[in-house]
Length: 509
Ligand code: C2O
Ligand code: CU
Ligand code: CU
Image 1 (cartoon, rainbow, N blue to C red):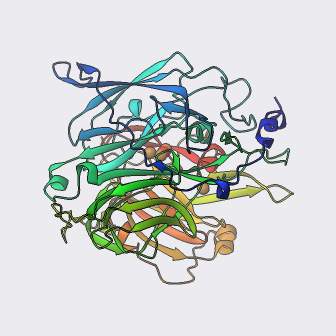
Image 2 (cartoon, protein in one colour):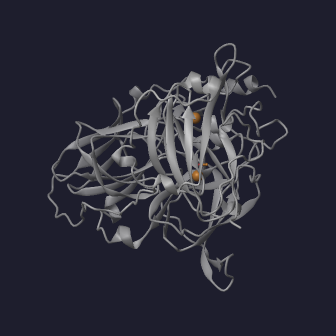
Image 3 (tube, rainbow, N blue to C red):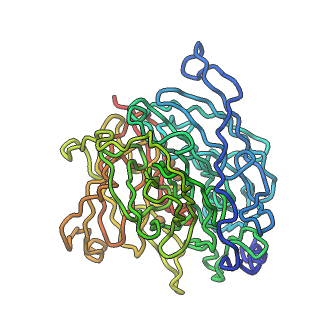
């Protein structure tokens, strides 16, 4: 089928969000996932582990008081889906169920690899982003299931406390399924984190941010480019920024410290978040857990896939109304009560040590390019990693237990958030280079000194911003499991077309 035929419903007029009254809806907090009992552990049948059953299904949900309900697909009865709460070392099982209808409600682009017209329109597979999970439970993009099917996934959770998130990962339609609402948060806790006495309970909240393009009647639009050779849009930017599924929500807070677990779950939008009027805050953790020390900030840059663990102290703002902004745009409001309270939480000066991995530990350095291809009209038709298609055999085959340096070379005009499944890594540096020399002679000619990662990136990461015209180096210990995984750009439009590659962890002999 011609992609343009599907484009028609997306011609509906877009909502002018400036016509909506701000701060009329309280910030929703996704419910905590409830286990359905216990099941034998797949690694030791004598043990039983908590069992959850989560269903991907269509729902209607109001994103704003004055808009009709929006059609979404969600895990469970809300989007974001239920939040998992678990502890390091405590494994669990999830049966992910596809209870979606047989037709997609967003426009399919059959020119995209993996989404050809002979593939079922509705497919889903769930990946737990940031988890050290066996390959059979990692949500390999080709392991999708059709409506009526389910998959039982095992999560060992043998890793440090962190905010992970689960989301759809189906080949060729990942961007549509996540956009439809198939995502949720997953927290791992541990004793190191608990000993710090950070804000908790009602003072610790997820802030899951994603933008959506809404029609005047509040429905999701997913645009299709008018270029028939490239109906795919290379990035989608919405007119509405939702927080936990609401547009312009407000949150009543007490004048004390709060811990906000921020996730950028957008398809393509990078955020530059700040509190009006530059109220300072601290970042205490990144993708894979706590930073060594709190980092004072007045603004936070966060790319798709990344997480930031923030502590905001409202104690000096009795009775004030503070807005959270993305650049100049208002995202949400904090209403600080005027009644003084006693602070019971702390913000310790030292959090969790992160030992820097010496470069000498790396047994291999891989030069990997991020490539963009444009057609005659100048529209991007495809993006690749290392000039390789998804279907080509895996070329990155690290040995289990070894450490490698991955050198990401970005000649494109975009910053790409590059994510590796299974592992956590550290950012070594970023360095400007001369793209033309590399393209023609494969010579790396640097145009400036290497720049160390920002202090709030100097922890364990699983997603790194590889900036335009820069070489970004990460050092990666491959630990946990052997098997087939993926690495990709977390701009979901890029990932689908086809900025994603398999990689294989080889068992040590
Ligand atoms: Cu958050 Cu492979 O993804
Ligand atoms: Cu992942
Ligand atoms: Cu990208």
